[in-house]
Length: 159
Image 1 (spheres, one colour):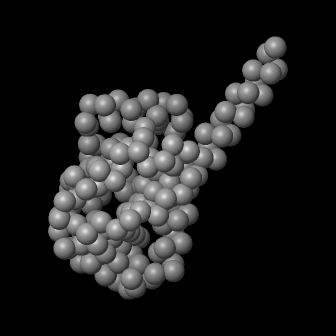
Image 2 (spheres, one colour):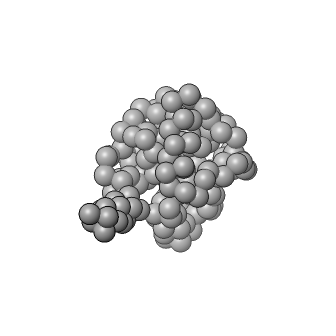
């Protein structure tokens, strides 16, 4: 698990997954690649969730801003947050765009309290030839918790 034959590819929204990806990058001496959609999602959390939900429900896989040179890697640490109880549409795009046969895929997943949902089955269906290791899973619900606390505070002010 060291050196240039390892890639850390990740998607982040709030930065939680980026922290893990950058730690892996430094600790392993691996290459780092941020998965980004060609058209960014809205910065507003609720608008972002609504768009991601529409994409999930329609099966839309957004085009990506760039592609990684997967052929040169033996193992890929793939990081992403759970969106709507499943793998985010840009991760589905990443998996569809790259041949992952003969690769070891080591997922690391962040979530806001609902667990990994359908992510394991999505990984298996979108990367059937890859050796998919058990995911590292971390609850990272700071943003949702913060929004709920602010809403509760505002509701209290209005009573």
